[in-house]
Amino acid sequence: MANDLLVLSYSGCSTCKKALKWLEAKGLSPHVRPIVDEPPTLAELDAWIPKSGLPVRKWLNTSGLSYRALGKAKVDAASEADVRAWLAADGKLVKRPVLVTPSAVLVGFQEEAWERVFSKRG
Image (cartoon, rainbow, N blue to C red; front, side, top):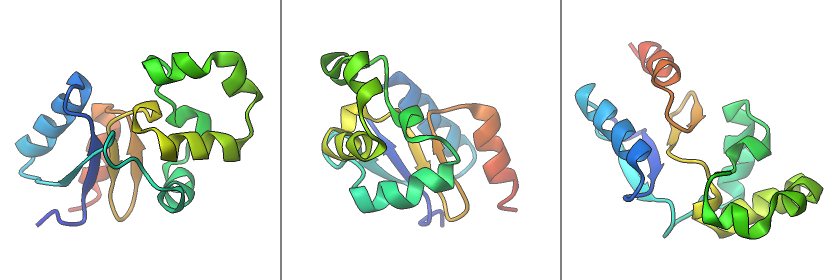
């Protein structure tokens, strides 16, 4: 069960650990993919970004070192295609966790939003 759930996670991230614990408490065991080793591909991002309902820049982990290394000015000046390419190249740039279900893609862990997705699942 729950084979249709994918979580892109970073093992050192306390928010990711909290999200995975939350899923476990719901009896769900998603496939967990290490986001640093296997960042989302461009094809995945092309599918997931529209499904998330968020603009591509909301996918950026703005508190991470990779973001700081790029610098806000460079990010602000970048095209959406540039940002997608950066996200696909560096998993640490991606806000995490990323939850992918057949019906939704959620970026970051906000319990209320996750609750809404799973209340629809029946």
